[in-house]
Length: 370
Image (cartoon, rainbow, N blue to C red; front, side):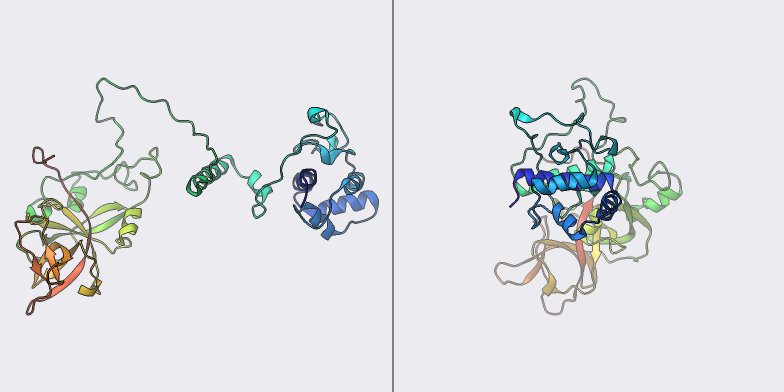
């Protein structure tokens, strides 16, 4: 095992090659050959740079190298970063002062990551170094290494109290505009409203809803349009058949969210709920994001999950679970006024259309119980 002094010499040699010889051992060997007429062994030069390697790097080897290269006799004992310009190779002006009267300077530990190029890291741009620092800090926290992380500089806190202008206040949770009526109840689809100029989904046609260049990274993430089937209503009540399944518009969602629920790349559909049987989880008129899957069977169901179901020709949305007494699958309503619907009864056609992964809609004033 190398001692601290040997490790420091190896680090100094790597530093010399990286900065003065373009990071190439061959360039250093060419320099020595021009100066002495003899070319050292390349394998030996590589071995001298490896921490805890088989090549020793004692006083004799350090003295030989300083003479071959044309360095100050104690150049390898100088601190990292000193006397690297060729005009300073033989100078003592940049030499650090010895510590505690010792004959040698305090050595610096070598680069601790042998699989990561020290030269490449030091050549990174400032923004790249900042990103790398953040990644390292996150890794230290996740691995619970006990290494102290200095907090990043935070903006000055805003003053508290007084009146605030809600129109100019930061919106931490940007949401799409809310329409007065659902399309199937006589209202316009988002596509119709956008075409008629009733709403604007951004500052520019290429900018997603409520997103500007100055907002955080999460808000600037790309959005993806999901087809809206305004005439398809999943009954949260007695069951209503679909009038048609034509695409009437589109609603935008963040791509990361769609990926997380399997609704990205055009796999999702937005339909609307009708009725009060799912009241508590899904309200009448709310939009539902469904991930259709024709291959789903009863065997694929996940208990206590909301699904869209074609029950004997009627489109319904229910919580699917197993009956604790019979052990068979049933469709349950969040509103307990409605009875469970058996899904494995004889003579009934049941087709699982897909999973409902999101529901959203308008919150009415005065109708929310704490």
